[in-house]
Each structure stands twice: as C-alpha cells, then as structure tokens.
Length: 88
Length: 115
Image 1 (cartoon, rainbow over the protein chains, first blue to last red):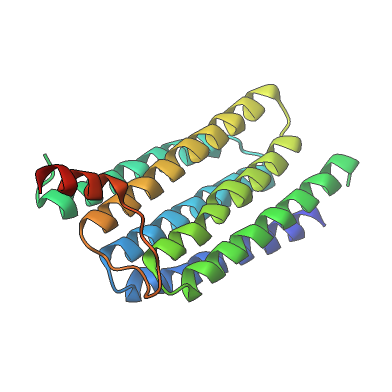
Image 2: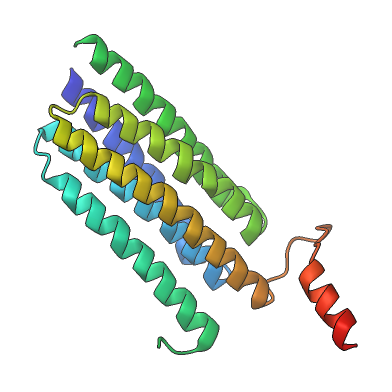
C-alpha cells in the first residue's frame, strides 16, 4: 500500500521534471534554461529523498546533499561564464 | 499504515501540488522574471512539505538531522541562485514583457550624478 503511493509520487515527480525539460530545451534565453534546470534539480533531490524513504536505505540522503551543492555550483559557474565570457 | 504515515502522505500531496503549480508557471508565464516568480513556490513550499513528510516517517534522529540540513540547504541555495539569475538577466538586458514598470533607482541616481 505505502509502496504503491511512493511509486505514484515518484512517477508524478518524474513527469513534472520531464515537462519542465521543455523550457530547458526550447527556452529563448540562457536564463530561461537556467531557471528550468534549477527546478529540475530540486525535483531530482526530492525524488532521491522519496526513494530513500521508500527503500529505507537512508544513505541516499548524502547523495541528495551532494547533488544540491553540485547544482548550485553549476548555476554559479554558468552565470559567471555568460556574464564575463570566462570562468575565472 | 500508522497515523504518521497518513500525515506524511498528506504532506507529500501538498508538496506535489505546489511542484505542479510551479511547473505550470514555468511553462506558461511569458517572461523570465515571471517564470522565476512562479518557480520560487516550487522550491520553497514544495520542497519543504516533501522533506517534512520524509522526516516524519524516517526511523532515527540521524536521518531527521540530515533531512533538516537538506531543507536548510535548499532554502538558502535556491533563492540565492534565483537572485543571481535575475541580476544577470537584468544586466544582460533581457527585456521584461511589455507593460512592465521597472523601478531602477540605482541607475537613475548614478546617471543623475554623472550627467
């Protein structure tokens, strides 16, 4: 019962993440793509947390923490690249 | 299902609702600034409700501490990234949708001093 509910939540989150990929592919400016990728990383973090809750293997929470930090670093790097033209 | 599981499922549903609203706003808003305004809901309320529901049904205090750390990280990092995206878009000259009123006192005062 509970597993089926978790599967439902994970499937809907994956569907929403897939829908927001439309803005990352089509979006007219680079900033639109960055906003879409931020939303997708938030949803991916929540999917990892839900998988950790479903399978009761809570080591995945560390994966979610590292994923959040990596997404922030990627956003900062891309912004710096498009603003200055270089990364340092 | 224990009562904690029922509360967690209700919280997951609320988080899923706000994530869906954020995605609809991301897809249908006309402008990069309004799209950011829509996705802020997705990041704050949706992630907060889902992580709170996961913390209710986790089995030990260690997992609760990890989930609270993740919650604080998402709440600090995501508005910072959105703020930087908005600042970069404004400095690069991404035009807002027509009819928007922009109040930029900094540029006006600087131009007033130099000119």
